[in-house]
Image 1 (cartoon, rainbow, N blue to C red):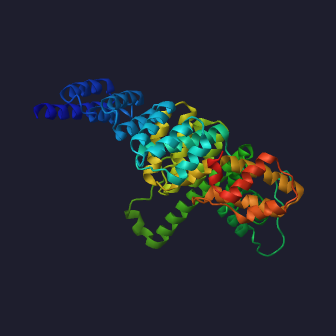
Image 2 (tube, rainbow, N blue to C red):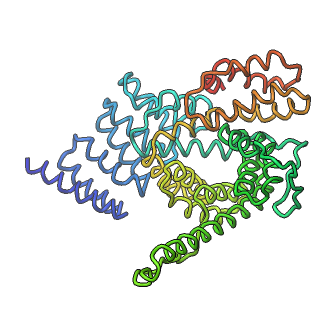
Image 3 (cartoon, rainbow, N blue to C red):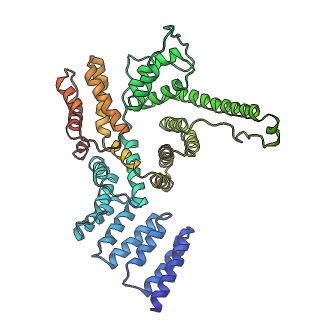
Length: 447
């Protein structure tokens, strides 16, 4: 009894040291605890959990020790798989996950670890489709690993976009505007927002010239061009527009402050002089979080990591959890590009903690990346050949993949458009697009 109590005390002290980053000293405490309880694998599993945030390789070593003590314990092998993933050892993780399933075929966590290991080995299609359909993300480390897998594929193979049509002229912010002298309201603004809600970047670019002609200074013009051009993969053209949008948003925030102050003076008269004067932000007025995050994506895509990080950090202060997700993804991407994997995983843990359901949206985008790339090429071909029906069906499905977190099951409209079209598409692209139209997300598992 005394030995067990002493072991518990040593482990608590070891966990405290590990939390301070003193992993080597922590390991010594756990080794002493092991001497008092040599047959208890939990000693090393507790060491692994304590060491994982700062020293993944030490956590992996401890997990190995645990499986040596309890070679037939499914939980020990499942945890070994998890720590192997954190230490970037996918082969060992795959072996441990399979051993878990051998010992306990109904282990709920093992399939998720198996998918993650396959994904880390570059077997993206089956891994990501499996994570969307039956992944379990109760542990923040596991969710962070799943999102890292998304970012790896997006960086290695993507992103996917609807290519900018050759017949669409894209102005720069400083280009002259031909005024609209129709003398009546047009639905340009409505069409822009409909296209935005549907994730249709080309539709946005088709609606924006009319809105720009009607109201050159409308706040949706600069922001719309920036967002649409980014979604079309033309961040070089999007960058001046996003700078314009941020300038307009900062000016609007300053004007709103001045108007609010003026209204207060008019309402309270001299009494306002006895109240504290409203304070301007110390760092000046900032743009909207959504605009800051979009700018972060654009600069990240251009390889400019420093402004991307600063913009995302400012955007992450928003109260909107969905915008914070995007901000943290930009920050995680910056860290991965800089070789700072642990910092990236920390950002991803925070993102999932704040709004776990958004995880599935990003995972199914990554699972369907080859489909989206095939659709992008097909949109160009359909537009060139004048098949508007096929073009719109493809654009609609790309928008669904980008905006709908549901588990997609196919598209009759797209299947019908493929049957009726005379546009010749590459055989590989037809394979992906038809497979998606018939099986939805299931096509990714057959990659």
